[in-house]
Image (cartoon, rainbow, N blue to C red; front, side, top):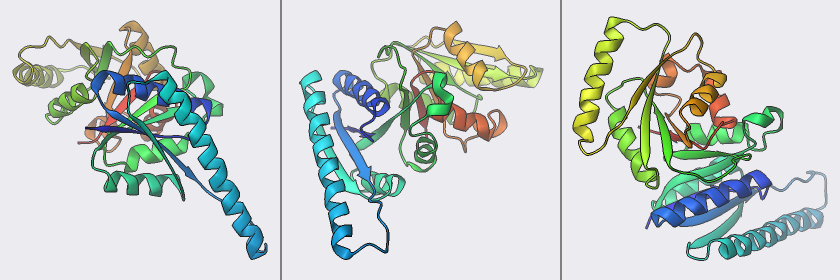
Length: 275
């Protein structure tokens, strides 16, 4: 059975992400693992006994917080298998070690403040670092997500051949989604672009002969976060799907700052895939 892991700092944003992940797990039959990594802050000039007390206090705080969170989540989602773990260390390193040791984990779900609170992100750069380094897909959930609808997803594509397989991966991970649309952003439309799009659509139709997948070509003057917001609203999307920052779509179209903005301040739940 696949497992969804949710890094948590026990904040409200992380709780929303845990609820979203549990809703997804409820629909696709996955297990849920809540994962907390804590650090112990103390001065190197303190006596040894005081340092030990700090470690014990931090561990007890993590244990109590995880116990409370598990009780709440299990009560809300009684038909989902939910476990919790906590460990001392640094989030990025501990999470990557966990992903390497547990091959059942196929998705990371993390929370952020969302696009309406750019200056108040909790995970912020941590989410972006996880996104860059995690060997598996990462689903970022805004803290201001109004509901957990999973009907309509937008897959942002640059018409690269490998994206056909990535779209299939997105469909597998987001099995509750009923409709996937492909979104292709262009700055300057030309004949070469049209030919590339036609070939890609033929490959898409061949890969998914039983599905009707719409392709929306959206001309933009400048690729920035507000364009993503506008597209999401116009097409009534519930989720957004992107390839990882190092992939051609982000290299050629999305500048690094926008990639980080989409990851740290998503307008909707946003899935980032790795080839």
